[in-house]
Image (cartoon, rainbow, N blue to C red):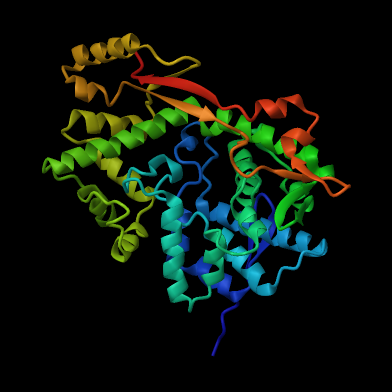
Length: 407
């Protein structure tokens, strides 16, 4: 009988060869829930601005697993005791931390399912996989939920300097071609240590942390909050809103069975059963794109134009301002649309709208990034840094936008 080799390697454009450490992790990667991540874009609609940004959550998850392997090696080398069981759980937790993302990642969060975030859905997937794999994910789930007694394990999964951020900044910078976001993740990991059960950075790595925080700020303004991708994501949200309204009015619209289920049913956290999870696991970017290709020919003016705008990249004009948008500007743009197409004000609101975005590179209200000095003292990175601009990164910057059709 042939036994399948489960110790495979992946060739990653960022890190080179990524190895799968054991057969248990291989089985998780092979599972249909995880393979779905190949069909979930990492950066939502950003490919409409940066043509190379077609990488997926699958890429990101494997990259995180690789960096976690490096972090475990570094910490063990520095005398931090991490058992094989704990190491395996850390790898599984970081591998599955994003498995609950829906189509186009953050772009459609809370649109497919009402007020249910991807972290909660990730946890449901992990619980289901734990049942399938003979409770082998129990410790990984404890770490993911922050219930394990070794606090720094949770810091590696989710903090202001976690493995997740170390991968996505470097990866998104690479695929978009935005060099300002390129961080030295290997250097940062090499500088990691543990002090009083807390993840810290050794003081000789402080300049790498400064670069990391500045890169994060620049990536948010230049990439994640780029006005064009922001406008496209808002259009996508409005497509879902319009479709749900039309379906509630009895209009029959073509969609895959999984997508159709969420269009016809208002699902909240209380309704999210095991059956719902199974249907959600069949949903990905392709369902949305194929549906919009059909809906652009709909008889409904709003739906057809919203879909055509996205499919053909004939996007709205987006302006970012430092001050909130005057209502007179919004009403003037709506009036133009109403007069030109003889539509209602409610319909015009799908194409003319405002909102705000904020960028906070480093939050003083969350668990801070701690710097370990040679004398054994620990301090916040902002206080330890001699860069005055780091303090500026702790202040949220809010910008306001207006979207409306081009003349």
